[in-house]
Length: 158
Image (cartoon, rainbow, N blue to C red):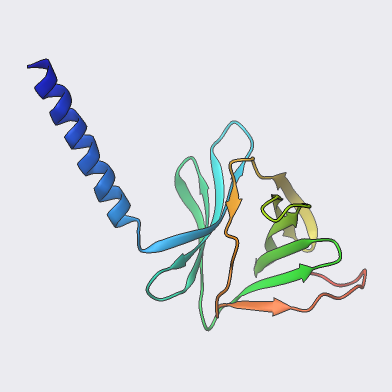
């Protein structure tokens, strides 16, 4: 009887896992930044597998506090500073700018990620992402606008 109960419980968990995988397969996460602190916070970018639109979300304790859709009318900005080995992804909402920085290391898959929020071009939040954060090796999309790097102290991204 105990073996049957364990088998049924295992089958139930397997079916629940398959259902959650199937329901979440509509998008592919390309950047995930888990932030340090007592509260669970996560910044992520994902690409919809059908429409190819990019979704930004900021979650706190599992609840989405900010969601932004990037498509033909609203494109995500990307700036690459190849001299410093940093790629920035960002956008503005009113007085606020949201920026994800990916700092490349010496090795191909070595990198760190940080997340900044600016208000009127002044940093109001800056966090290094936890080590469990990741970025896709190839982030390409028609909904990303590449901004040319400008070596000017007055240049503001995004």
